[in-house]
Each structure stands twice: as structure tokens, then as C-alpha cells.
Length: 342
Image: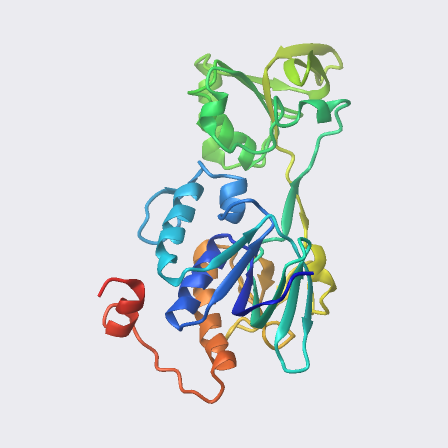
């Protein structure tokens, strides 16, 4: 174990809600260290849909996950948060003086006034289809998420699944792919009707293919696919030529070590109050998709709201007995000075 890093707040999770928490806490002179199991900021936005458009961020009619992350990182620059990527928080215990000791699997130790859990749904792992030998093709020809669409330009793409992810990527990748086939076990989808309609129009126009069946085997050499063997609904087998297969069978959520911290849990979510988004343990907060309360909406903008109210309570932990003067960034010269705009 390394010598403990002393800070005001440890934020677990560098997704949009964790990043905006840095901003709200920074306005109140609360210093943060941010820990994330991924190798970069952005959380699910960066890992699962960096180039997928998001339409419900206020004042941004459309923004990709990567761009939203970039804008949030720019916004928090004045507060100089310290990031610890490729680290998973493995322990959290309350010390006799009321501070928390937070440890990671990399041996880093923090001593902090508060802990803010902004871990989304925990760590997400793709559900792997039961196809013999699929491991040999992963990350070279089989991909469970799309990090950069350009890497699939000019390829024979096979998308497997019938949910929103499968249909969304079908529509996004069809213009780039040399050929594109959507494979699903039935002619019925768990996706937005408009997306299904657009997919069927592309099939009717001969711009892509739709097949019924399930992948039973893969063909190729040295991790490079050449074809997928499919068992059709009529029982007959056939091959689909492909050098890039994207199975979208959903995600498995793992809450991880947080589940062992003694917090009250409700179906792998952390109950909080709606005044300050504090958990059953005073000083530990939960914001974003990881928390639950009556009326909860799993939206990024809801997490932003939760971060703002959480910060007000954290101020009181850092400055007991001190009155917090609420200020607006539009009119406060002191806040503008912190942001470097005055």
C-alpha cells in the first residue's frame, strides 16, 4: 500500500455524472480525486457508444458520447481534478475521526472527507453468445461495442441481435460497410419502431441483408473471420461471409466491491434521499444510474441535478458550522474567477 493521498472527495466513476460532480464540487472549493476502472474518462459514453448521438442533453440538440466527455473535461479544467484510471476501488472504511479510507486494486490509498459513488450501473460486461471458439476472434474480428466507426469502413459486417443497439448500429454502419447483414432469431424486434422501419427500407432497396437464424460456428484463421455459420429457422445451415461480427446480446451489470460496503442495496442499486443524494452511510453519496429513489429517471441530466444538490451537503462536511452562501455563476465574480472567466 502506498502512502495515503489526502483529499476532500473521492469520486468513483469518471462518466458524465462523475465529471459534472467535479465541477459542482469545484465551485465550492472542494478538491477531488476521481477513480475509474476504464483507461480514460467518459464511462459508458466512452466505452459503449463514443460515436453514437445523444439527443437529450439540454442546449445540445445532438452530441456524441465522446464529444460530451470532451466538453465536460474542458469544463472542469479550472479545478485540476486528479484522475486514477485503470483502478478499481476495492475497499472503503470509515475512520475513527470520521474520514474515509478508500483503497484500490492498484494499491492506491485515499483519505477523504466524503465518497461519491458515480459508477453508473457498476461495471458492464457484454453477454457473450455461446459460439465455440469465439474467444480467438474477439477484438480482431468480433466486437461487442463500436469504439470507432471508421475501423469498420469497407468491411463485410455481420450484426447479430434484435434490440436497440443492433438496430442503431445497423443504420449507422450501413453507409460505411462494404456489405452489411443483420441476423436475428426471429422477425420481431425489441427496438424503436422507426429504426426497424428504416432497416426494412434498406433491405427492400437492396442496400443490406436481413437473415433469420442463429450463429453456430465461426470460420477463419489467426483471429481473422472469413464467415459465420448460421442455423436458419428452417433447420438448414448456411454461411454468411464476414470479417467483422458485432454480437449485441445485452450487457451484464456487476456492482463489484461496492456491494460489500455495508450500504443498503435495492436490486443492485443504492437507495438515496432526494435532498442530498446521501446513502445509508453518512458521508457516502450516490449519483447517476447507480442510485435509486421514488421517481428516479436514468438520464444524464438527472445525474447532473443530483450532483448539484450533493455538492451542497459535501460543503457542510468539509466546513462544519460554516454557512454556505448560494451563488450563481452568471453573477458571482468569485465563481467566475475560479472558472478563469473574470
